[in-house]
Amino acid sequence: MKKVLALLLALVLAAALVACSTETSSASPSASSAAPTSSAPASDAASPSAPAAGGKIGVAMPTKSLERWNRDGAFLKKQFEAQGYTVELTYSDNDATKQVNDIENMIADKVDLLVIAAIDSQGLSTVLKDAVDAKIPAIAYDRLIMDTSAVAYYVSFDNYTVGKLQGQYVVDTLKLDVNDKSKTYNIEFTAGDPADNNARFFYQGAYDVLKPFLDAGILKVPSGQIAFDQVATPKWTTATAMNRFQNILASFYSSGTQLDVALCSNDSTSLGVTQAIQSDYKGKNTVVITGQDGDEANLANIIDGKQSMTVYKAVANEAVVTVDLGIAMLKGEKPDGALIDKSGWKFSCTFDTKTYDNNTGIIPSYLLVPTVVTIDNLQKELVDTGYYKMDGKYPKAVG
Ligand code: BGC
Image (cartoon, rainbow, N blue to C red; front, side, top):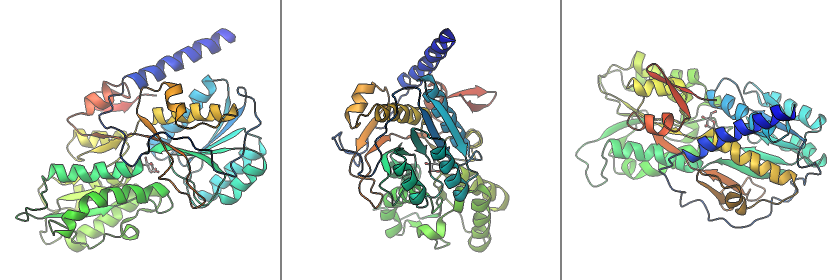
């Protein structure tokens, strides 16, 4: 048994090392990410009384219907188990009430640590009060959990930068120049779920980059839909994004108006918008379409020329950070920026104590760096790094 465990551990470590050491992160940590400073966790966050190994971790993921969360859940489970922990992993069908029940069950099962990717960022205060009472600390995974001081840490990618990369891609691809008004372009926006705290960061990042061109009249929005609430997609659903876009095309583009850009915050919305454009757009030009995640269907669309780019986030590394952080917390440490050097991660990560305020104060955050993927660097960034394998013409995610 010991031998099997040791072998498993060695295999997982080897896989993690390959994933880490081969990442060619072209981006450097964003300016908004603070240099490592030390900071104590938010006040009410429980200090665990659990042993360093042999404890139980509750991992609450939003849904199996979006590709990435399956990968996150699997990586977290595998990596915690390799360190000697047991893992209770739940998916809650994007149903916020179900996720609260799932977390309640984890608390009743006496997990030692909660790792939560929230469905409703504002809907977990009550259940997390129970976690504090039971002395179970919580890490907000990928999505910040709002309105509760029960959250000790936040692990994510730099969400504002994700949006900025999408906006900058549009600027670079159309070669926009704020002083050159000789050519104008039509753009439509599709953002994410209003219940997901990330969604506003993504949208704001993209909008801030594009605003000078909107102000100058170089970018125009025929539908007039610009406010986050007008362009949001509840639950990030592909069908919802598709239906909204079909309506936009029918109402504003049916008499020959050219659509140049569809700025989409992630791949599930991008998929719906691309479907709408394929079926309902009359123009013959290639529309610039953005995305995020590197979902297989979207990478296939990039290869087929139907989607222009995606912002890739190596969730295997997000899991590595979460596991190292969680274990340090369970050992009774108060991790700060020093965890980054101590862990020897081969990928970029910053410790931020300025950006993510969840209405109870700043939540200390570990932020990883996203990467733009297009047809030109897909092989180098995704396949050569070992994150994906080519399966015929298209990439399939590894792990
Ligand atoms: C994640 C994205 C994902 C979206 C939809 C966001 O919180 O950061 O990677 O595409 O949720 O699930």
